[in-house]
Length: 159
Image (tube, rainbow, N blue to C red; front, side, top):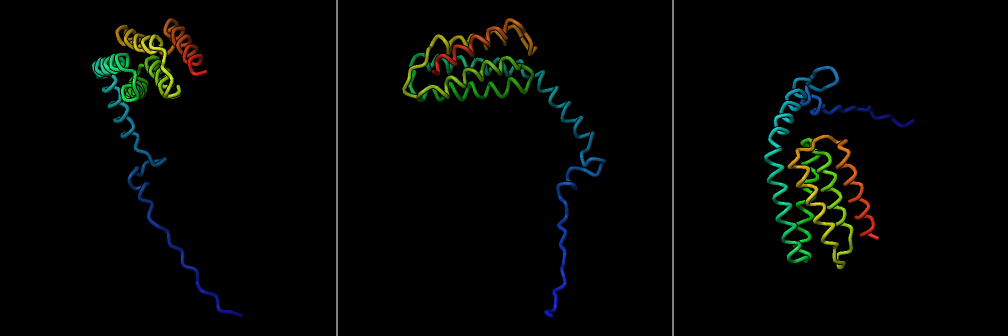
């Protein structure tokens, strides 16, 4: 019978566990509290950041309306997409959904097809209104009704 080689087991150190902390469950509850506190602080600052983002969206919209070419369309898409992510993160979920609807229209419509400028403008105006009225509730009935209509119009434009 052939001689068997001894088996050697190598157990690499768990660096992730060491970095996450040694508390039960591997996560430091204090770190979670500090992160949540930092996010709450940023939510308070979003009102000012929202104004800048909404202004950037308006500027991108004006550029697109003046020259609806691929470059201005791409810039408007980037701005809408950025606003979508920021708005949801900092407590403006309906603003994020409106920006997401606009992003969908800009991204999914054929690049050689002219977009309905009134529909693009309606999205930008809705974002302005949400920011101006400080609508942070995700269940604001008027905004939800407007969003449903915008989504319906986007779906029709993409057919």
